[in-house]
Image 1 (cartoon, helix red, strand yellow):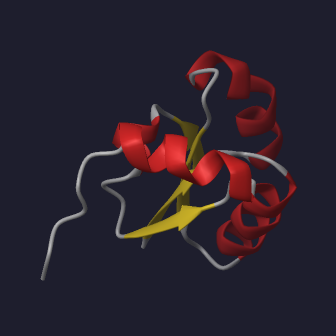
Image 2: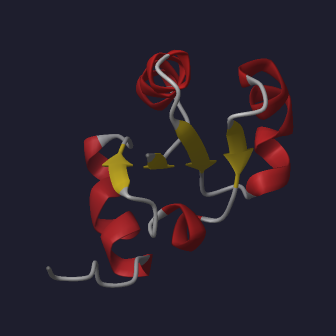
Amino acid sequence: MKIGTLGAGTIAQAIARHAIRHGHEVVLSNSRGPASLAPLVMDLGARATAATPAEAAVADLVVLAVGWPQVPDVAAHSTPLPRT
């Protein structure tokens, strides 16, 4: 399963580490762009990548991992999630 995170702070990193240990791929994103996540991705290993929030949002499972005050901004800049 591919897991995308909108946010790459403490919570997203904990989820990413756990998911990777269990064989999942993780796509991390933040507001500063993929290049800012390069050291984290290297630390997490081959199953981790960095992307834009739009790219992370198309993963099989998407985790919103931002502070409560940032939720409206993330929602305003996100594409609508597909309905099943």
